[in-house]
Length: 113
Length: 115
Image (cartoon, rainbow over all chains, first blue to last red):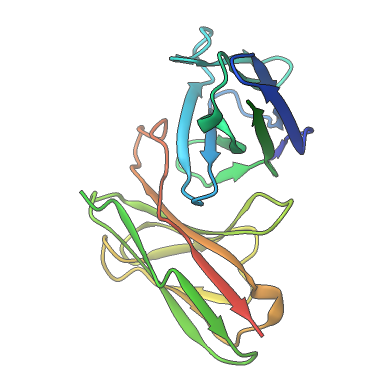
């Protein structure tokens, strides 16, 4: 079964600085999709960024970018120019085809003013 | 555009009671799923469905039933509530068929406490 590991239960960053959240996954498949979701205190699950495994180019969405290392099965999220509103739980997720999405345990990000 | 709607938002049950968590989506998504979220464990899949009349088990299906009589609705039933089922429950939906780079759309969650 596919597993997703987030090794950092908590991270902290100063406002306007950059932070990187780590994610590794285990799979024997070559075609799959990876996602980062943000969960603020409101509990909503908000998509931050997605990456198709067949694409070599790393995805970017404004201040959010990923470092996708397929051979290493690594999918880290970089948040640049951190803002107070970025404080949340961040979940890494893996999905293959029409199957279910597997989530990591999450990283709680604190942004210090 | 309502997206994924879950009801109720909060519920307290006594051990042994049964109840149904409702989930409805208005995006004509084929795929729907239920997750539970527990501290330190992320989201774990309970059951999922790839279309009306089709359901399957996820990681943690014991104690829960689902049915999918329509594309829009995917209720989750707790047969005999146990304290171990105290959790936050999320319903999600997405497209199928070559479009699974599409993310799942989540409801706002149901916080369920079993006493």
